[in-house]
Image (cartoon, rainbow, N blue to C red; front, top):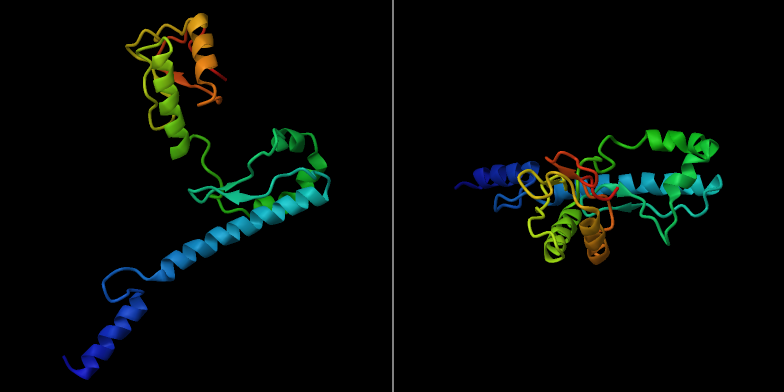
Length: 189
C-alpha cells in the first residue's frame, strides 16, 4: 500500500465512525446517551415545575433500563391520582410535557422483561398452589387459558388461595385471555 492509500483508508474509517476493526465507535452510543440525558433532563424539568406549583411529593424522574422516562412512586404515594385532581398544575406544566418525544414512555401494552419474569414466577407459584395447568404468560404479559381448566373461569376459592400465596411475587393486574370469562376468570384488576 502506498502512503496516500493508507491516509485515504484511515480518513474513511474516521469519517465512517469505525475503530479500524469494523466496529462502530462511540459516536452512535454517545448520541443515544445524549438523547437519554436530554429526555431525563426534560423529565426533571417537568418534576420541578410540578413541585413548584404545589405537587411537592412528586417523585424524581428516572430512566428505565429500556430508556423510557418514568416517575416511580415512593412510599405508596399515588402522584398520578394527586395530579388528576389539580388541573391548574397540569396546565402550568403542559408546555414541558408537550416537548417530550413520542417514544419517551413505554407503550402501555408493552411489558418489561422484568415484569415478564415476575409473571412467569407468578404462574409457577399458581401451579404450585392448586392450579397445575396455569399457563405461562405470553409476550404481552397475558395468560392464555384456552384449553385449560381455567377457560370457563377461575373458581373463587382457588383465586383467593393463589392470590394469598403469590402476591409477594406479583400484585399487579392478571390478564387472562382465551376463556369464556367465567365469573372469576378475569383475575386481579
